[in-house]
Amino acid sequence: MTDMIKIIRYSRPAAEPGTRLPLNVRSAGWMVTDKQWRHATGTVDRINVYWGISGVIKYTVNGELFTTLPDELLTFPFDSEMGPAAEPSEGEFRWFTLDGPLANQTLQLLGIKFFEPFHAGKCPKELHHQLLEAMRILLPYSIYQAEALAYELLTRAAMSPNFKLPQNNPAVTQALALIDAEYSDPYLNVNALAERLGMNRSVLTRIFKQQLGMSPSAYLELQRLRLATKLIESGETVKDAAYCAGYADPRYFARLFKARFGLPPCKWRHSLQ
Image (cartoon, rainbow, N blue to C red):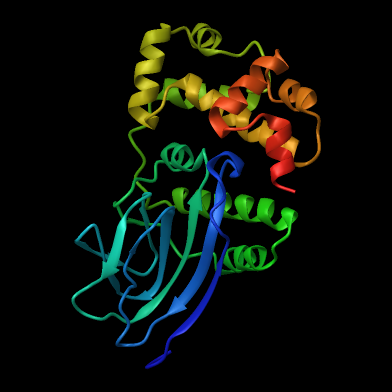
């Protein structure tokens, strides 16, 4: 498309920190720019995810020039100063923005680093279109749907054969497989992981953090909280959600939930209605 701008954008207002979903989608959009287009100026209160479709999209972040190329994905953190490049640019890109208590950890877990573009392959346009539709409809179920779609888009990008993950350590790969398969087991912890892998706990923690940027206990907690919040959102009692997610003590889970999300589980669920 030449000499015209086509843009579709849907946004939601910022929620109070304690009422945000674990991985909350704040906006999503699709833009085809003309030859005179320049990026808007402003400080973003969310994580920006740009996925290039065609052309070369130029803009500045914190005063530094960045480009979004076809099939590349690029992310920027909270409080980034976005602005125009010296020269206009023409092309097409899709984007979505995130906030929520687990947003940073989710990107970290997938190995996606801020300010580092990587070849993510063709943007799954149909999946992104579903995200746009979920953002267009301001209903509770569509909010949850948008979260799931954004997570799938990020996962698709991270699964690109061109995406260079940190060098895999076999012990970390085994630990991840065990956690993903058994995180709902309340007896699963770092000591149990290390014992089953025949490793020292400290060594396992060190190599796990080197590869993923977080400890095995933090990853285990992330998986449990993701499941628990999904169950609470769907109407399960706090007690049942805690047990299903691997928390033997629902009262401990409620304290952990409040410390992470700012509200007790029941009040947090009510705030989403």
